[in-house]
Image (cartoon, rainbow, N blue to C red; front, side, top):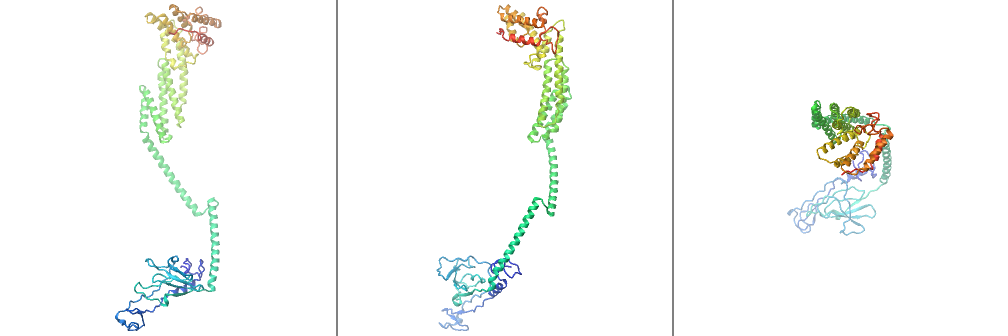
Length: 545
């Protein structure tokens, strides 16, 4: 129920309102009294002059008009109305004249646009208020009185109110009513204290639960259930993701799987092994690229590992095939290139996280380099044991080694020394042929030697040929001839071997280093004397054009 004074919700058994302290029993008694129907004496007026007629009169006492001639309009009966919950704000009407004892109030019940204000005469003693006004609207009493409505006749049928339209509302007070606010205040304080304690206790419990000091059973149960459900959902999601990833991988690498199958078939045939190696490297590179685009290296892991293993098998197989053919610098270079490329690809895959093995390739490369170099040296040295030196055969063996088997900056490399010696003899053979058929002159032959002398590592035999051709052409070669004599004298002094006396010039093994690959125990040049010759000839001017 609601307090009849302040409209606050209160308990049905309460005796006082906890908000305003109203005595509920007394207020309800006053409200019931105010709600009783107001009896109003129906009055009639003369239809002609409007004078008030006495009850039972047959003629107007003022103008004599018969009452039955035209009955007066019936008055509207006053009906009881329940108290209004809350009045509209009351404000003074600016245009209405006021004095110290009058204020105009805007009251309930008027939305017609017609002025519904009533003038309230304030009793300065505080005992009541006189209310007057027009024929429309509702009346609100003083603060300690119940609100009530007054039904007013419609315009045209106005019945003058009794007592000049004024009603006097009496304001009641008693000592019991004055004590009600004090009791209500004490109740409010007690309620506030209880509420504060509950709030503090709730806060402490929430903090302890949040801090993990203790937990509530129903929360633990729900949490555990939610956790188990989340784990199951994550497991199912993970399983679905793995299945999807596998399906996507099969679709993603369809072309690469075909290449791998084709490559494996090709390397099984000797004639197709090179094509198979190329097919497998293409499949590996494409698989890696697609995995990188997808952002997951693991997608291509199995395919890359499998394809690379087949590729390594093919490289080793091709190495063995080429190694069994005729010796040449070109073969050496082809095998070394394939091995180096395979190792480089493996190292690149390892850097990207793929589990491939390059150790077998590294071992195969090092072993091949050593054994093939020894085969070249041994074959070249064998030429010197023959009765007839084959300049063409030696050059065919060494012609491709310059680009494949040694670094030109490594001047004492045993392959390089033999290459320079074979080039010297091959150049001399060309010159002889060209002079014989008249395509070159002696001076031209000398110039040809001069342009290759450093590549031939200043072979004393070729320096002697330069001097011979220059003299035949009538050219001055005193500087070169003096340097040549210094070389012969230096070798005789340091090694006890005089070229042209102890050994024929065309049989002087300038390529023999006496260290790792000696050909003869006495015929040849030490590393120290070879470097001395280079230094001596570097300051000599040759005719090069």
